[in-house]
Image (cartoon, rainbow, N blue to C red; front, side, top):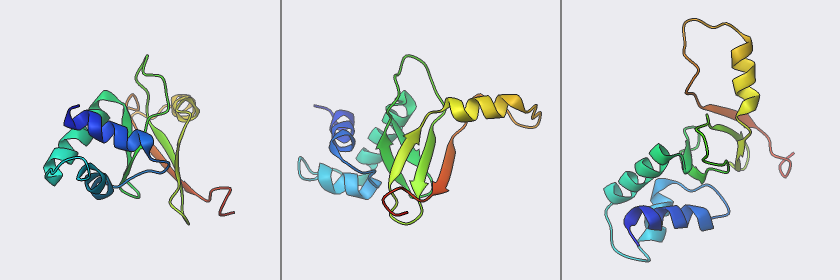
Length: 121
């Protein structure tokens, strides 16, 4: 199993989004690696669309969409507990297409929504 597969399996088995250093600590239980090894694997997985990064809480989560076509990740993040969930991308695609915004190209975008999850509400 290569490093990227190990990182993917760590994220896949987790029941919550993980930071790069949390992934590194779990990875070190399998073999000794440097942080750059984990970051390279994370970048490769993001490029493939298999995981997404939340810029708000600096965590990585498994993509829950079919990879038959590219999509724009949309993520909801709880302000209280940090729980994260990927949303249906078409919600925002349709919204952005409705408005004729000329200054930006919305073919590739990411949306992060800060909210309160049902458990914290």
